[in-house]
Length: 390
Image 1: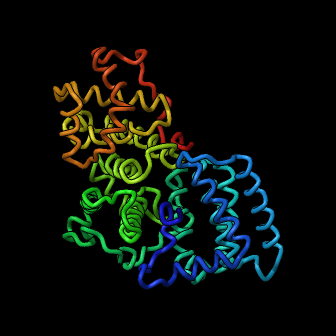
Image 2: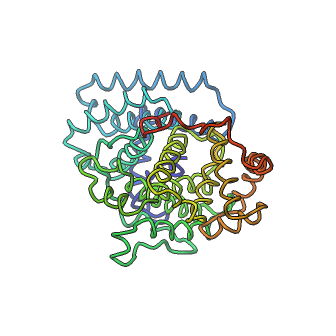
Image 3: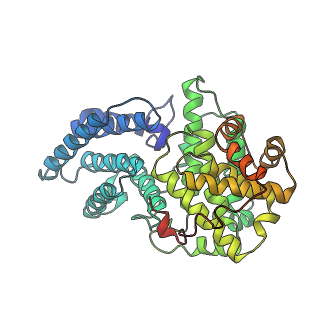
């Protein structure tokens, strides 16, 4: 569970356990951290559509918070790594559930505790540093805000697990500087090509999860909100590439749709979906006709973002975009659209979701010859990133 959402196992291999063994032993030896971790596990089980008790989850959260408060009153434990880790785990629970007020409460406490310890690096545990940094980047993406900490670099050993294809970490310097997304898209295609089946051996599954997390982390670090200090380089990238944010957010949604369960997504995906709508509309207003000319990437982004069954209004918006793009490209059937999106990257799983969920809405618009949706854009009220908050 932990490895599926957060890179807690950074810097190790299955044959040579190191920091992960140390972290797990810490979890097991500390009752409060163990309770916080199992509370997250229960919530995560439910987020995947599995049966669980809301009442039990609420009870566990209340008991965990009570025990954390008791540790905060103990001068010997109040700033310990286990107490900090417990609060970080509770923040992760609220983050996935989309409970923003509770999330902010935990993150405010966490930020102050890290400050009193002397910063993330002073915590010593590389695993805990990455855990907190990763969660902070996710929160900054959800809330469209600057993170509390500058991102911690993932260790090079994060991709030590064997994969059928090796993710690339090298690209011509000029390309990496001017279009870092090209490397990320290349690695996403490699991951798509070697995606293991659910019953694959644990070593291969862990390899894939770690590589996927590495790509996701890179995408988070390229957000315009990704640095606590000055995002000058990222601002230059966005200014030089009109489709930078459209491509970046589309790539992140692709990892969620293709490499995770495309069911019951939380606040993070909802926020990305709304931010993508803002980015698309900004592109339309600033560079009219660009998305129509870049038909492959445009169709791919519309299809990916429309797969998530989170909001009827968003589904309608993306379905209308797909139908409009089909009309402009003189496409009539799904197999023609699929051929176009495969120029970027695609999977059979996504086709199955598309045909079952979004394609009927697309056909409605196509058959009605793209009549206006009540003569208005259903997202007229979404005009800035502040509105992207869940």
